[in-house]
Image (cartoon, rainbow, N blue to C red; front, side, top):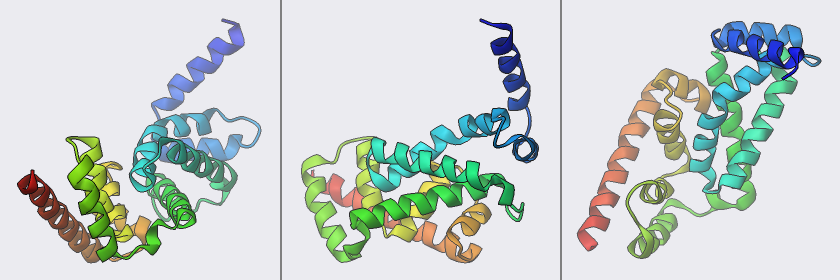
Length: 196
């Protein structure tokens, strides 16, 4: 390892101890020529964003592409970030928009909820298994709005107030939709268990 590489690792280690607000401040000063603080932010959020985008898109490759587009957008727009919301909320909002854009391209949101329920129930009789695949089937039963809220709450580990900012809805609406989505998933899970 060269001295320069060792110095970069030490700087990254020190930066990783800082909170998002401080990293954003440093990244704004560094970008576009130095990317050390941006890279720390990238690594801090990359895996969580992959999990969130995967829950929308059902494909690891598409989730990775959505996250890469998200991080490119962050790189190009960080100077315009206005601190009206936390950086975490802002980056999840960008990922949310990227995933929805990809969903629309795949035309998944054209199928209305009733049709999606019939399709998902038919498929679930053949392929519903424990764990991740089962959760993906249950999420497929939800509307895009409901799925967004559940994914951000569970996979993204966001507070309801942050989710409300990301999906641009009232806090009470987010809580109500989350409760209804969980109820819908529970009923569907019981139906599948009963049919086994």
